[in-house]
Image 1 (cartoon, rainbow, N blue to C red):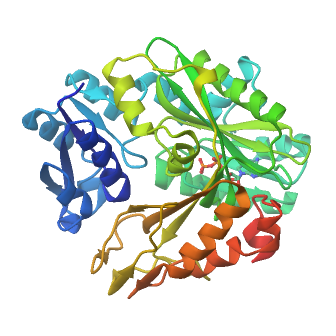
Image 2: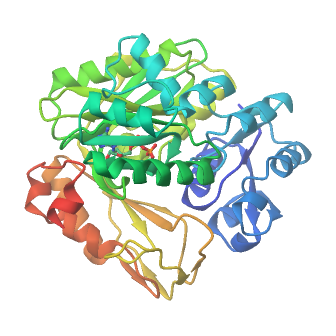
Length: 444
Ligand code: ADP
């Protein structure tokens, strides 16, 4: 196994990766910005290096600096976590050139899946159902008008390079299209340096259900069931669960097999996620592939008993998967909530100093933390401060655990979305499994 791994990330995911490395006897190297000097991931790592000022462009996205530190510290591999450089194909290439193992798929696979247009094309080619729409970049507003008419309103206007719910706009009527086109193109150019856009049908009342896959370098590929992530705000997930209460075994198997086929068709290796929208008739449509560990990976770990970071490290080291599809079990039900430093009504970030943090404890409760008591949440990064994961033998029991845990979860000094999460978890529609992507707008 690797002797030393650099974690090119911060917050809860850096701390989580370090934990598994320690369990495997791997030394860890953390990098941090001036805003993160007292962070948990810095304290947890064996070595840590300051990489620059708070802004991500000058620190966590500074490829040269991170590669230099990896080499100078003698790390053999780099774990990118999620976000930041995790889906940056040029970073992966630079790692490869520097003789560092990137813990994830190869750079060309990341580049292809990073383009929503390109990935739609590739999935369509191998017979994976995609959301109806076009597979080429729109040339101008005139073309957008024609395409939207053909597809039929409402439509979804999307940036090919988009992510994190940014660069996506619902257009309900023809008269909204021109403004949406201009605004979305500007945002996509600003955020992603790429204004290419395409149009998809807006799927009414779907669920967001994604399949976790693992593939080793020998093309052994398995699926680790699904996660339902329909509870979202601003097209961003806030609560995820596994299994989905909506799927029957037949659909589950079909989606799993489609995900494996998708991964194999692009020569995928390491952990990845194929996201689907599932409509009321249980038709599923490919949305995108995320070529990294997901925020919500713990719910999969809780129902399968696997450690996904350990699997990632083994695969990156060149080991073959130690199990086949039929060995993968599925026990009980797990739910994760993302705890954000944000106003629960407006969803605006609420940075500041945490004056008191008290966490619920119990054998069915798991915490992934980016902060501790007296930490300061800065405005520089994603305001997610923690994840709370619970499990139960059934969905009802897991929901009860989550209710209790949220009641006992105390964060003082900053605003958090905990009140909103409590409203979700106790809502009758949620209990009934009526969890479509419009849940928050419809019920809260
Ligand atoms: P991102 O890459 O920004 O996360 P995705 O394409 O994964 O964007 O979509 C994020 C969310 O937006 C989905 O989970 C879903 O709630 C919503 N969404 C995306 N595409 C559609 C669509 N065609 N119809 C309805 N909802 C959609």
